[in-house]
Length: 395
Figure 1: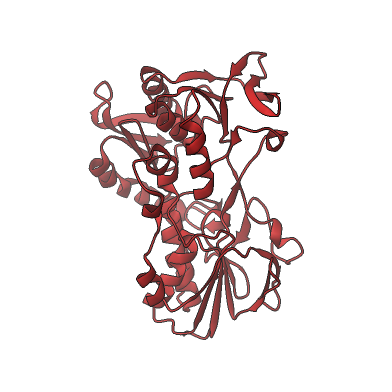
Figure 2 (figure 1 turned 135 degrees about the horizontal axis):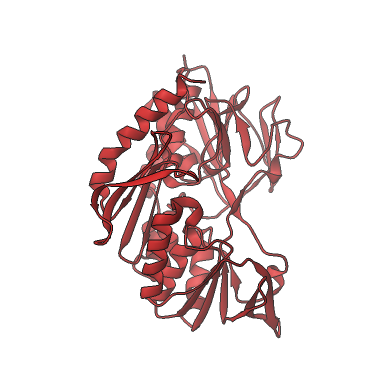
């Protein structure tokens, strides 16, 4: 039964917008309010490190909905006014401008913020990439620079390195792991990805963490690694992960531990839910708390949160999924590629760089990875889902 008269969504992100849309599709006719700290209407983030950074897309193309669609949502959209406090018992949010907003249900979709290196904020030429404005600022500097060092060999760092190399810069990718995305895709695929980057001219300085940034005249001039080597740079991008944007929730009464801790319905407290990068929810089929930072989860979890607000009793237990595009490579992963798993090529050919790999532990499928085989890997998703159902019955 729909009992809420006003739902407040904190975060005008993809997750926040999709929650509002799912509520309306589900029959919600109460008041809807979305507030966001950025001045932009809701936009898509995955194209930022690729199409927007490269210049292939105009910035306006990342808008998730046009003005007509936003108007049809019949929601108050408050932009450029960050939430700075929450009283969970009264379900009241305070914003930077002094607004006090109370609601019957609150959905927190504040996402995550880029992690920084000590001292990076005092040096010019050091960037992060999290927002549209970050991307546009970085692109302007890329176009007048020649040597870029990307610190962080994860998904975002690898994508930025690939995009920047295609723009013609001398690119160095640095990080403590031994191959790009080693933590996300395991040894087999990460070694192959390292070959792709090296063949395209990216210099890989991996296996050593960053000690500090080197500056001259207030501007960055290089990156010093723990192993003592120094990487010269006109420009540096820090891509060492993101932290859930929960600092504004201090004193709120919510449980905060690497995100907003939620139950399997994404509920953090009575009438309060979390969605997207900021939500750390209990995954009943995996038997542990999970936090996913990807666009697919933002959409799927938004549907689950809307369903919970509308009174439906179905826990959120998705098959984990993410993808990345780098150079001419599309990698898609369903499930989790954990350490100490066995890997088998089940379709395609590794040498041809078109394949599907299946990962198992103790004979149980934990994940599948597709390399330039998008249709085929989706067919193998079911094996991961089936294995999750089997694991659930053992808890």
